[in-house]
Image (cartoon, rainbow, N blue to C red; front, side, top):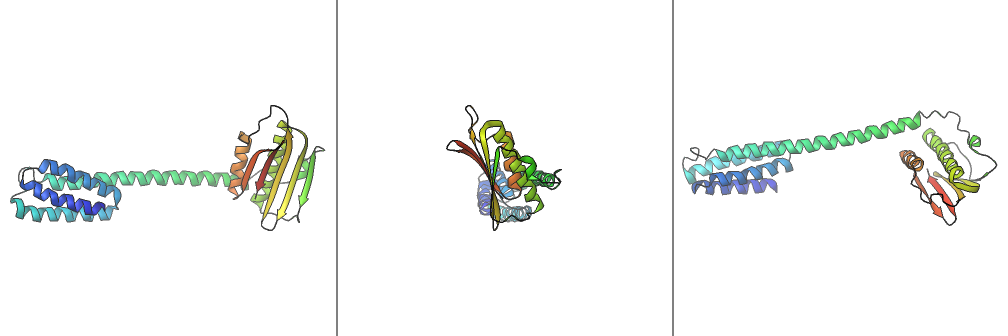
Length: 232
C-alpha cells in the first residue's frame, strides 16, 4: 500500500512540476518516501524509490521539459532522503525490539540456571515440617524432574514460612500426584490483621519460579483460610 501511494504521489509531482509547485510536491514526496521506508524492507524501499525516480525523470521530461533546472531535482532528492530516513527509523525500531527480546531471554535463562544450580541438594521435605503441619499425600509418589523437584521444595518451604508468619493454628499441606502433574496446596487460618491478599514479595518470587517450569501458582483467601496452590 505504501509503495502504491509513493508511485501515486510521484506521479502527482510530475504534474506539479509543470505548474511550478515543485517545492510543495517535494514535501509530499518526502513524506510518502519516508512512510515507504518505515513500512517495507530496505530492498523493497530501494527498488520502489529507484523506479519512482526513473518514472519521474521520464514523465517530467515529456510534461515539463527541462525539469532538472531550477527546483526540479528536489523531487528525486526528496525521494532518496525520505526513504533513507524511514529505513533508519525502521531499523532502529527493529534493533530496540531485538535488544528487548534478547534481554528478556537472558533474564529467563539466568533464572532457569538459578533453579538448576539451586544450592538445595537434599530436598528433604521432612526438614520443613513440625507438629503444626498436617500432611496429606494423594496418589502414588514418584520421582520428578530436577527443576520441578526443586520448585516443589521451594513452594512448600515458602508457603509454610508464610503460614507460620501470618497464620494461626494448624497448617494443612496436601500433595496430590496426578498422572501428568503435581498439585501442592498449603492452607491455614489467618489471624486478625494478617494480609488477605497473595501479593507479598515472597509470593511474587514464588510465582516467577513456578512459571519457569511452566507451572501456575495462586494465593488468596478461601473462607477463613488462606490458600497457596501450585500446579506443576
